[in-house]
Image (cartoon, rainbow, N blue to C red):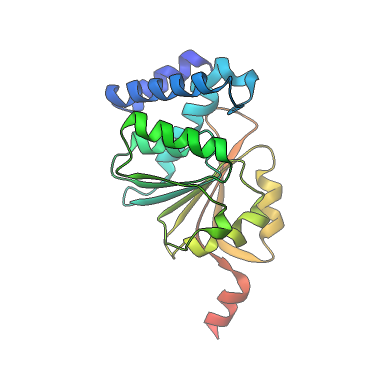
Length: 214
């Protein structure tokens, strides 16, 4: 996907005011880049395709009924900030443990005026109090075999997991099939033919499922 294609895609999928907020988010990110490497320098001329649309495509995979969303390893704000801008009915929790990233995310939230419904949880996920979420997203946070045990306590039976992956999607999913069950599928990415998104619902450890059937 080219930058022009990405801009057209965004214009077709979000209101004009949201597009303007996304553009402002990009300005804030680029202004911060001299102080910290929020994204790979090689992608700064592909921000709309590689980061904005790559994040926004998750919206079509999330339930319309979702109200509580947690983004793990929020980093520069992808996908969490993009989702929060595009869906004003979502309460977003951004989990990030790196001090500079925390400060940047809080600055973005303040500048974009979304602090009433976006919380920056500045700590490691292991230190965060459990709270059930309708959507769990994680972009480059951890492989699936580490992610599921860490994040499962934030899920309920209807939680939708949205996990962007590169070429590793199929192999990561295969690695957890012996210990985890759920309705898993792999969805091709709109922005990269070599990338995919693992989606899942009804995720639980197989040992627990076996106990519940007894």
